[in-house]
Length: 203
Image: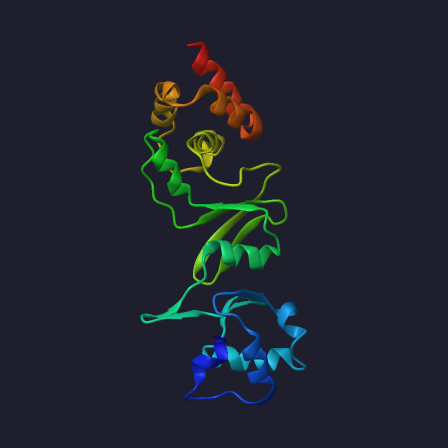
């Protein structure tokens, strides 16, 4: 069902209705994607946003909300990032995921990390903060080994007790699969993390 179908009590007309009929619920769109479907895209976008057919995430970035019995649903982080980057090659996760590794981290974070090959910087998309970081390599999905390595990579930037984390990192080494951990270190570890790991193993 198209987004236009949600407006039966206040129907759109003409070119704006034609544009709304082309939208798919739950999809994220860039302005240039929609400009090909409209001869007055900015006017039509403003009309669709005012009617709730589209929601604005950022300058030039919109999504067509999927409706539920509780109201419109927000897009997933993956949908937002895919639309923003125009790319499928990225890894999205919260720094709070570090807490699952068992290294004594306890902080909860409001921002979301996006490892990618294109953009760097913090961007507000909708009501969320996304911290885009250009990385040469990153996995397709999270693992304990990657989180262990990435936590140590970013330790200086996190609101954690550094000494506690490093002590726990040494104590937790035997809980990891050695070959998978070494592969994660070789693929994703910075120099400081690799040195720390070497010292921990040598103790």
